[in-house]
Length: 311
Image (cartoon, rainbow, N blue to C red; front, top):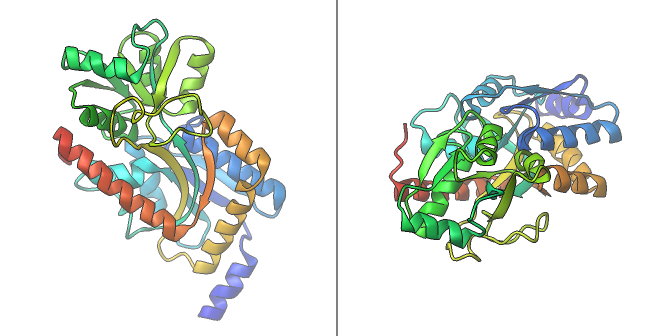
């Protein structure tokens, strides 16, 4: 059996690899996935990928489909912080088990989220934002891609750490949440670079800072919430590849090696930085698992602080 698995891995892949993405085209997960898979095909022409977007329900649809796939290396789930670190905190039951049904292959990228307000807003810093929330509890509104999204929880983390009350307004996706800021329907949102960039270029929004503990090398001019007096906040959007549990280790190793190789390339690093505001990381399975476990504990703490109970 071991010999058969080894031989199978040596031949892998012999057909197209389907990559399930739990979000619509154009977002952080989709852009990172397409950059990496297209570069793998460019460098290794025998490798072919079909990106299959399955958006909706906090990533449930795509993740559930991947969980049911054969563990043969021909179905990959490309997912982010939400499906693996936030959903287990926010929901009592999931249509997939992050730990029991999936094996992490590689973390592709890690990106800060941007704290964004309308270009005409009198709020010009994270300190201003928290001062306004403190002056009139509940008056500051923030949009998100939906209740239980990583963006929602990052915003709640900001509020909890600053000791202020703000009002959540959920939207059907990250893009509508940024549009709501651009049209002054909400005070701010926390979003990834792909959704913010068009509105920055159109001078409809401005960035107050980032949600990570350290300044991002991708957007070094933006201060962190911690620098602005909001302690402990460290939320990012990582993107990674996962396969169904039971996928042979030699195949996982080949997937890791192919992905890690392209992530070392200057053009891929630059493209991830420009389009996604993301840093290429190529974190392996063990360290990736540890990161997920750490993130789960941190979001559990945030949920407890703001009184969010699993649905």
